[in-house]
Structures are given as C-alpha cells and as structure tokens.
Amino acid sequence: MKEGNLRVLYACDEIPKEVRQIIEFLNRFAEFDVYGLEVKLHPRQEEILLTTDLIGPSAAEKAVKEGKRDQIPGRRNLTLWTEIDFQGQLEKSNDEKSLSIANDLLTFGKNLCKDIDPFYSPSKTGSAIFKRGAVHFFTLYHNSLYVQVLSRPNFETIPLDWNEVIEKLNGVGLKKYVEKDLGHSTTFKFSQLTETTLKNFKNFITWFVEKVEGQKSNKLA
Image 1: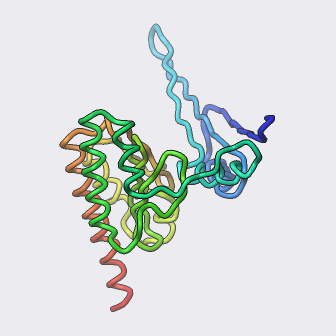
Image 2 (image 1 turned 90 degrees about the horizontal axis):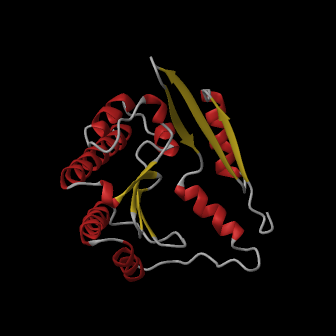
Image 3 (image 1 turned 90 degrees about the vertical axis):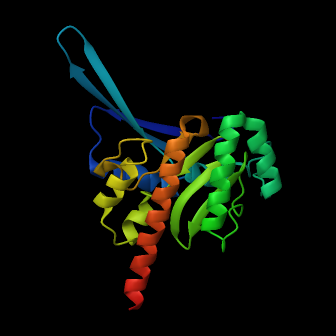
C-alpha cells in the first residue's frame, strides 16, 4: 500500500457472466487489479473435491497498469525492448528445449505479421506481440506463450463461428476451452509445449488468420 498498489479479490462458488464482465471492465480501465475466484465444491463418497477458476487482468492490461505505476518515484520505468534485447532475455530465462520453442514461435510470428514491429510495447521483461490491425493472435514473453485468439477485442469484432474456433483450438492440445472462455486469454510456459502442440498451435493460428482474412474479403466483395 505504501507504493499505491491495490488488488481486489471477489470469491464465491459461482461467478455469473455479469460479474465477469464487470471484473473485465474494471481491469481494462481501473488502475488497480481486480480478480474473481470461483471455488466449486464437489462432494464425493468419502471426500470433498474443490476446484478453482481464477479470472483477472490480462498480461497486457497488467503491463499498461505497471506503466502507470512506474511513474511513482522509486519505481523502475518500463523499457522499450529491441529484438536483440528480447533474444538475450529468452536465452537467460529458458533451458535449451524451451528456448528452441520460443525461437520457433518468434520466427513464425514475425513471418505472420510482417507489417507490425512486435516489440512496439514497453515492458519489464520483454514481449513480442503478434497482431494484424486490431486482431490479436499471440504474444511471447520471456518464458511463456500468451494466447490471445479468444480475447475480447477479437470476439466482439470478428464475425466468425466461434464454436468452430474453440473446437479447432482444442485440437492443439494445450487446454480444453469452453464457451465461457470467450473474451479471455491464456498463458502457457514454453516448458508446457511439446513438438506436437507447437506444430498444432502454428497450424491453428494459420487457419485462424485465413478465416479472419476471409471475413475481410467478404466485406469488400
């Protein structure tokens, strides 16, 4: 609190859609972080199982807020990274296998989004953001992959069959997505990816880009 940090946690057994939207709205515009913790109780014969689901600010939203907080005296400012700087951070933060995956995704993203510098956004540990216009695909951080395909800007503005998108994304093998994941993004450590999931993810992103570009062509026709 001395540095002005504040986090709000809302915990209950079920977070309604309306409350999720409020949490997402606050995280987009408030200077403090808001989290929702859904804790469900599953009684069994001789034991009780608890499952949790945490929602909160995206990595991009947290970076923006950190940028504002860094204006407070005593805090280090965010840095605008170059590709060389980011590459050095990748090498510092990952083992050989994870580094190979990170470099593969970095090359893939650069070929996918040639018109936008992925290092345009200041951050503390480096990031490479891959998007076309307002359509976000994924972001690389120093040790993780941030999947943004289902993010709210995409979901709200692109007229796709999003059930089909979820089905295709589930085929990657990273996570089992459901309809309530629309509007959210997910993060995976590079160490969580295998050669198979990496290949599947790149194939999925290529398919998704083609779908988005197809929508643009239909509008122009």
